[in-house]
Amino acid sequence: MFEKVKDLLVEELSVNPEDVTLSAELVNDLGINSLELADLVLLCEEKFDIEIGDDAVHKFITVGDVVDYLNEMTK
Image (cartoon, rainbow, N blue to C red):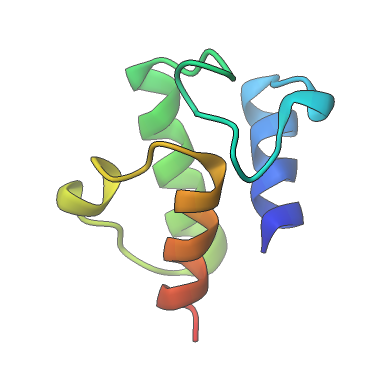
């Protein structure tokens, strides 16, 4: 799952691949703004055929948070 999220970040949001780690913060480390976070959520919803609620999005601080959430939702 980490590799899939990393690919989305790198290919769709132009994040430097070397910067993407499980502990990397989306905003502080990767420079993702609120619009890009919304794009990431939409991309994940489409790719994994799930719906991500606003309450979950507010908990997406690190790449690991996103990965953990997607792992839980795609079991």
